[in-house]
Each structure stands twice: as C-alpha cells, then as structure tokens.
Length: 492
Image (tube, rainbow, N blue to C red):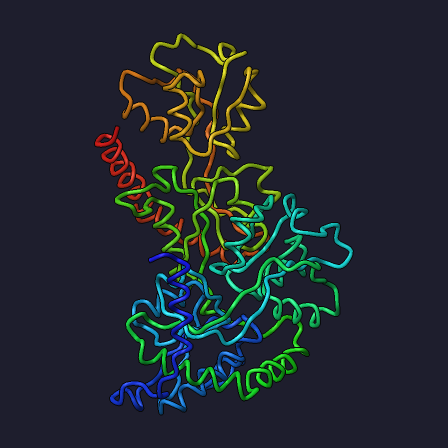
C-alpha cells in the first residue's frame, strides 16, 4: 500500500466512533501497556508500587482500562522495544509520546491522534549553534529508536550522532557537555529548560510537526476502536490539557526528570560488523568472539544486552560520551586511546601484516615508498600507514573487505590488516594475494569503557580471566576462526 494512503487509513480509523467496548470475554483481563519511562510529560517513572509510571499517556490508558473494565499493568522497556512487544502480542498497548509515521504504521496500528508537538533543537545558552545547518560540525544527541534520531541521521547528518537509550540520558549528555546539541520534542525540551534554570534554549525554527498516537497490534482493531472513542472524549472534554498541565507542574521541580530503575537499562555494546573472528556475519546474524564476550559480561552485570552496530570510527566516541557502555571489535590498546577510554585487561594479541598482490616484489617497508597503501579507517593500521610509511597516498576504507577488493582491483599496492584477518584473506584468495615477510609489532586487544566506569571494567576483567583460565576464550577464537574460514571458502 502507498505509505501516504496507509497513514490516511490509520488516521481514518480514529474518526470512526464505535461503542467503547472490547471483546466481552476480555473484561477483567489485564491490559498490558508497554511504555518507556523517560518521555516526560507523557510517561515518566514514579517509583510507586503498583503504578510505577505517570504522565499524559498513563492518564489516557487508565481511562481506557476503566472504560473496558480491565486493570492496567505496565511493562517499562526501552523505547524501541515498544513496537516489537505490541507487534508480537506481548503487550496490548504501546505508549510514551509515540510519533505516528508511515514506516511505523507498516508494523503496528495507531490510534487517532491525541496530541501534536514539534521537533526542536536544544543548545546551551551562548552556543554558537544557531540553526539546523550549523549542526553539521557538532556532536548532536537524540533518543534511540525515535523519530528524532531518524531525522538526525537522515536529514541533519552532524559530525557525530550520539544515540542514547532514554531522554533522561540525552538531557544528561547536554548538561555534562558531552553533546553540543540535542534533537527532541517540544515539551521535553521546555521541561529541560525549566529544570536546568534556563541553562539551555530552543532554537527558533522547529524542525517538523509531529502527531502522537497509542500503538496497537494490527489484528487488535476492536481495542483500537474502543480506545479511539476514549481519546475523542479525552480531547473534547479538555481532560488532555488538564492532564498535560498537571504533569508539567508536577515535574517542574525535578532537576532532570524521574529516573528509570537501573535494572531495566540494557548493557549497550557498540561493535563494528566486519572484523573476524571478533565480529562478522553468518546467515544474516552477527556472531563472533566479541558478541559472545558481550553476552557473558552482560550476564555478569545482570543486565540485558543491547548490541549497537556502528562504523569503527564511532565506537570509541560513543563510549566516551556515554551513549554505549562498552566498545568492541578488536580494539587495540594504545596510550593515545587510553587517554580517552578505560580498557579491560587484554583478551587477545596479534601481529599486523601487510597484504600485497601475488605478483608483487616488495620485500621491505621502504619498497612501499611512493606507493598506494590502504587500511581500515580509524584503526592503528591506518595510523601506521599514515605516519610510519612514506606512501604516495593512503586510502582509508570502511572495512577490511573493501580494502582487499581495492588491492585485488589494483586501486592500492598494499593493505595493512591484523594478522587473523590477513591470514583469512590469503586463504580465500589463494594465488592472488600474499603477506609480505614483515610483521609489524604485535598489539593487545581490549574492550573499551567510559573513564570512571570501574564496575563494568571489573565485570569484563572477571569474565576474561574466568574464560581464559578454563580454556573457553581460546576455544572461542578457534571456533569463530574456523567458522569464518568455512564461510569465506564457500564465498567468492
């Protein structure tokens, strides 16, 4: 269906006024509501037993529950999980100031619109950032899984995108100056300004207008129609405005909004997806040593794991700013990086090698003078190519696959890569590429954490020690090296 027509059909649903009742056999059955508890004033955490959240959306779903004779139960989850839980039938309603978009309407059913707002840019007072165009060189934060983050990545495209799990964490990044600006909805922006003593301001021109709706499973049309009748009363009676004003007043005294319970916060790990055997794709799934280690560290911390896949150049910045708890993908421990992040104890070490075509006659580093050399951008191999060699030009590739293809296509004369990946490439392209008989000094690999995050580092160190002591770490490297070789052998 055309996306515009799809959205029109969804909104049209709200105009149909049917009796506000659900299936009769549902009466008394709990109404499960999935919500994210840092989207003030729509849904925020209270800490009260039996009713852990409050807000405009909570007032609305409580009305729906009373109308249907169904008690309401809340599942507090990260924002992006709301849609999955509703689509899978594990929640009846999704709520948290959810913007209605054509893309989301392909997965879930929306109620009629119950509120309208704008997306805005928030910056510190006195900032040199004055409009959307000025964000191109800035570090800009937004909440993970929201339309704010989509707009930031697809339209604004700043120097560094900082996705945080909750709006509270976005606000904290602004307050701590880990972010230069943030994109958020109008009401959360106004609340941040009030709670911070007017330390921030909203840039004059809004980015867009947004409409909010509750989320339902596409098959649950009876519940959606019943909810629409309640929403119409909620708006027409003036209850919406009263609810909004009540929660804005209640929240105005809080410094940064109510906090979400620690146990619902996932352990966020940033990985780059093409560095075997640490991380790589097998049957459309990300696997590797670092994936297994991340799962083990999350289990040690008793926190659910959330993997975030980003270019390698973004891994350390996201850890530094607190947008991720841990960074991986075979990060070399260096003195320079140790000034920026906290490293775990090493869990692997390896040489670096220089790949050349089979017909090349290079024997020593000096033979690469005035040649074209490549490496994966942001890596220590990239630093070596740029600073230790006198190459004619250094090509900075996004991943090893691109670099090896560049070597095969004679775009470059040599490609510098870690030994494990280099060895796999030689095995895949037998008779086409080889390693120079030169080994660049070995490096140790570690996981990266934000400086001061000693608790997480301690958990990682314990997992590394335990797995090494019991031989599990060595087995992981053997397993994933073997798997990747098999994949590559059956590939090109």
